[in-house]
Length: 370
Image 1 (tube, one colour):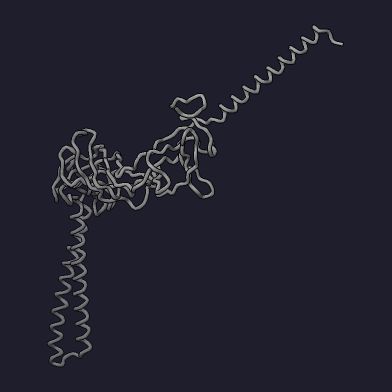
Image 2 (tube, rainbow, N blue to C red; image 1 turned 180 degrees about the vertical axis):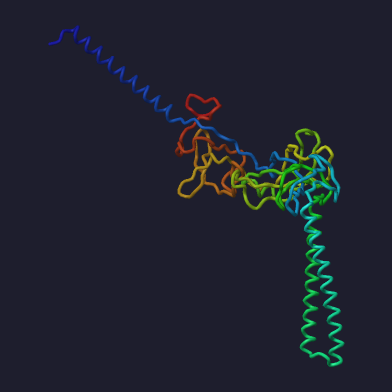
């Protein structure tokens, strides 16, 4: 039988044990309650803009640039221009050693002289035999032979004359001239170098028409193709804006950068814009109607696209219809309205009706946003 003192100690221990259990249960509920509130990052939807602006960096390039080369091979003996030289149409740029081609031309002239002599002899011979045939001194067969000889001599003369023209042209090709008025942008060969026919030796940019070459990301090609206005500024003259026009967009992407090359033509010549300058091109393009949300806000389940809306501190899954991508966003055709709050981070960790706390916003003791 327990003494009164021992009974008191046992009762106190029992009360203490129950108090500890109650305390632990309360802590557990608090922990469960705090764990049930999920912190999220949200975005308040705004009405979609009708236009999108985009800036790309590019380089000022000539619209027409030729890589000129000799039409014959040989050794360069003279260079008449420097990089940056302004040249006119027909101006001499470089010259090859013409010695060998001049010898070939002289040989062709000698062949023409020999052909002239043979043709004159064949013609005189034919005329004599025609007279003899008229008097029946020779047969028709003999006259036919003389006529054939005359035709052969005439063909040989034509061949020699054509050969002389070819050699004359070849000799003239030893002088490289500018095919248009422009500026020399590069020299690819020097005096003393032996070059093959067609090898580029001088780069010539035609004066007048200049462009800006830019690289377009693949998701912006169609928007820039429909650009209403294009503004070009060079880094050296940032306050000097020039209006341009998208002249062409490459049909295929660059295999290395996966971007599409585009040319923005500058219709008006500007002395402040020079070849090789770095330029910033600003595009303004129309956008399809609709609200835009980040790609991170989308939840795809069984082929359906949805987003989480935050209403009164809880999340609600709402299906949407996607119109199409727009950069790092998607255009929503239906399902959302301006002013609604959408979860844009942590969408895969939520469940229907779950309480959430908005990052960067104070919360009440119950976990609902204030």
